[in-house]
Length: 234
Image (cartoon, rainbow, N blue to C red; front, top):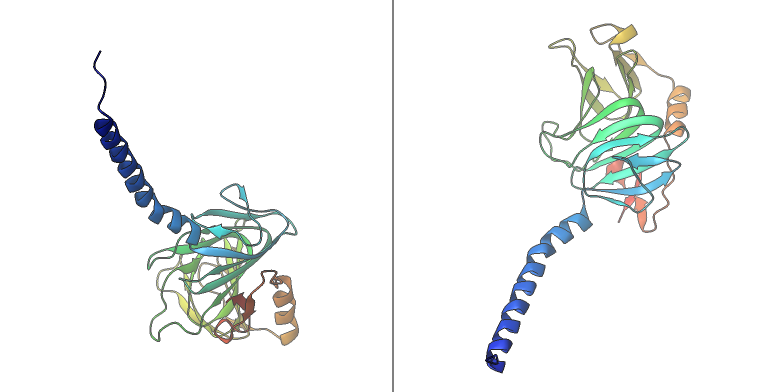
C-alpha cells in the first residue's frame, strides 16, 4: 500500500482551510445583517411577542411578523431607517415589516401611538404607512394615535402634533387632513365615509398621551426634537 506524500497532505489541508475561510466570509454579511436588524425594542413590559417569540428591552428586530401585546403590556420600538417611533399598549395586535417605499405597519386591533421624524425630506409622505382595515394614515413629522376595532371594523385617529392624511379604504376618494388636537373616524358606527372631524380638549388629549406613554429603559437614549421630545437611542 503506497503512502501519501506529506506535500500532498499539506496541499489538501490548505485547500480545505481555504474553503472553510471562504464559507465564513460568505456568511459574515448575513450575520451582520441579522445583528443590525430594522428595529430596536427601546422598552418592553408585560407579555410582548413578535411572531410568537417573546420580546424584551434591547432586542433587535431582524424579521417582521405579528406583534401581539397582552392585557397591561407595553412596548416602545424605534425604526431608524423608516424614522418611525411606535408605542403600543395591550391588548393590541400590529403587523410590522422591514421598511420599504411600499411597506406598511398595520394596526389590526387596539391602540398604538406613532411618531414620525420631522427630519424627513420635504414633499409627499413616504412609506412605511400606518394602516388599518378601513384607513391609511400618511404622515411626516407627526405624533398621533391609531385605533382599530376589529370587531366593528372601525378606525380612529387622534393627532397630537403635526398633520396626517387620513384616507378611507372603504370609500374611494374619501380623504381628510387631520391636524393637531383633532379626532377622525371611519367604518362601523362612524359610517362608510370619514366622520366630521372633532377638536378635542387638552384634558382628553392628555388622557390618551398617558395611556400610551412608555418609559425609556435603554441607557444612552436621549430626547429628540425631531421626534417631538420622545427619547430615542443615540
